Image 1: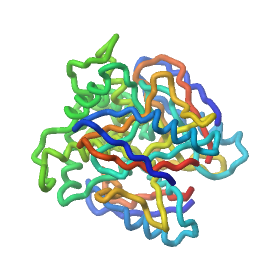
Image 2: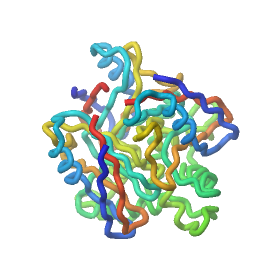
Image 3: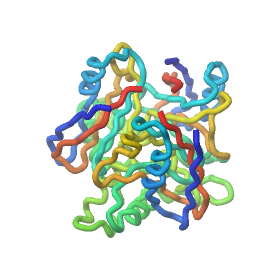
Image 4: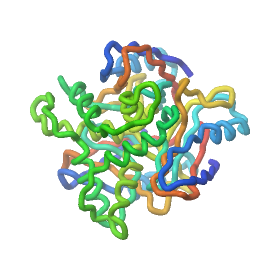
Length: 129
Length: 129
Length: 129
């Protein structure tokens, strides 16, 4: 079990972490298997995505608009509830295949961390199976 | 492979199952690894969430409002379709890390079962990797 | 690590792949464990679902309507962005339990591939844990 810190730069951001995961895999002994990635947070998420130019901003716009504008109860800052909801909906746990110490992904597929409440240092747990 | 039954109490509910999972882990031999949790249902879901007071109800309100109000085909009870859709969207399969026989989670992060059609006995499959 | 090709038939479609996964499991040595399924694509997704008659079309209608109709930046075809967004939201990675070389699922629960931009050959990675 290893930790990986991702420093996000903006308030809301889709960050490509494919290279960070591949770098981690290069330094492991195991050539092939699965890699588990888990975010220890409630206002960011992990998933795979297409990252054609502008698609990261498209995703953020869509996620922002998907959260209904209701009277929320959440203390401190009710407008912040959408960040928690999208994190729970997209998920914080991801399992991915690798071979020759490199992620197996589709041609356009990238591993992304979706930041909903940055900028911040985000802590990820990595474990090879 | 073990089964864990969670008795939900309301029609719609976000239930914190972190302690149930930790209790299960305490009784296992393995100190560290990953725990797989799977819900054998189509109207509930598993994810991680922030559970500040009221946020459980905020999540339920948001999920209810996210499902478009369309003319659905689903037999018996078309208004019930949204429960299936949110279950498929959030997901029924979850993988989490543990150490010293305890889940590794962020400060505000909890493991939750989202009940969309209770109250019911929900059957979960648990397996340590 | 094995590959499984699923040929989708329509532009948008929810395809039951439960039997394909069970067939794969029947030909493996391991009797019990977890099966990992990963889609190497950015316009389809994997999840579990209820498939009562018509519910597949209900899901597609709901997913189509959940994506906000915004001015997207995505090159080539901005109207295509929703397919990427729903793929990232539902997810492309799935872990499921099996016993006696057969998936353990709830009574109404099926394993589905959600096609958002077919018809196409979709490549899945399968791995037993």
